[in-house]
Image 1 (cartoon, rainbow, N blue to C red):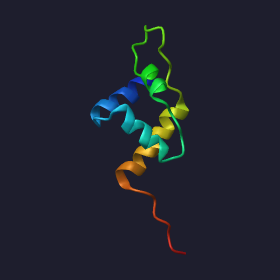
Image 2 (image 1 turned 30 degrees about the vertical axis):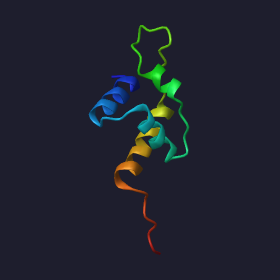
Image 3 (image 1 turned 90 degrees about the vertical axis):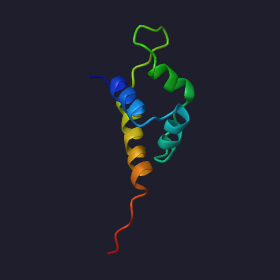
Image 4 (image 1 turned 180 degrees about the vertical axis):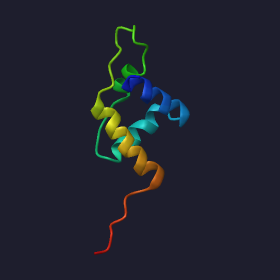
Length: 77
């Protein structure tokens, strides 16, 4: 299973739009454009298809944790 497949399945399972994904990645300081997302979510045989790299998926997942749980609390020493 490719990163594209994982990303597509998460998008559908969580009912996320491209705007939601952009906001989620911003939570970790990563910028992704609507055009990039459109290319990632295209069919593999489409001329503008783009493979989803590890960096994009990693930052999305890290942002998703913050989005779902909230920001990490600092532990008191």
